[in-house]
Amino acid sequence: MIPVQHDEAIPGPRQRAAVVVAHPDDETLWCGGYILAHPEIDWRIVTLCRASDPDRAPKFRWVLEQLGAVGEMADLDDEPDQAPLPIDQILKAITRLLAGYSYGLILTHGPKGEYTRHRRHEECCRSVVELWRSGSIATNRLWLFAYEDGGHAYLPRVRDDADRRDMLPENAWIEKRRLITDVYGYGPESWEAQATPREEGFWCFDSAQAAAKRTAIRGQQS
Image 1 (cartoon, one colour):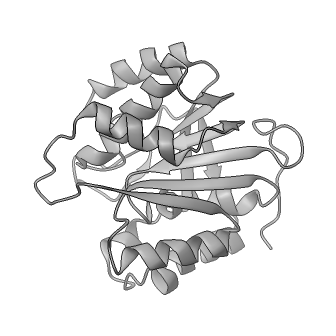
Image 2: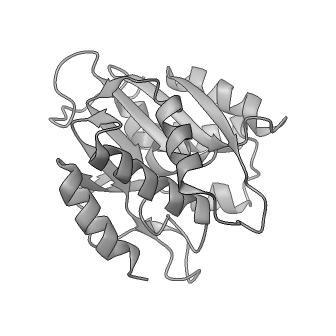
Image 3: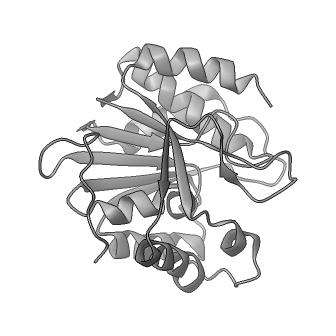
């Protein structure tokens, strides 16, 4: 079992937390270490895409079991051309996936995603922030994944301006990699396996107004 670190972000036993991501595997890539380190939390992990994917959907369900989490998938368009989705469609999907619960913490993508470039990551971030700002979802805190790849210059790594940086202990790192390679089935030479970060980074917000203001600024930055 991964050792549990004291973390004031999630007060009390059996606090509920959610991870909202675009695709199955994003939850493991960008915050898998934090999930593994906190088995005392009731995790709900949801994805916007790939519910009908015959390969990724069953693997996602197995990862949920490995993480001790529950979750659900939506099936929004995820074609390679990345045509923009209607914002109302994304807002409705996230609201349904979060099932009307309140959360101590929600984790999701950053405003520019984690690498160059995936529109669904960016849309997911904006939608979660907007739902929190409008009161349509309830959480005490929101953490956004804080990674960048220098415009494809290197593999994703934690941004210098991240509010929180967690270097994973060896056992958490090994388990996170195992989920990517053995469960999701990515080969050791794949981008996913090579990109899986040992250090995880987040921007951390205690208010929806602060999240909306700062993500609007960061969303304009390259």
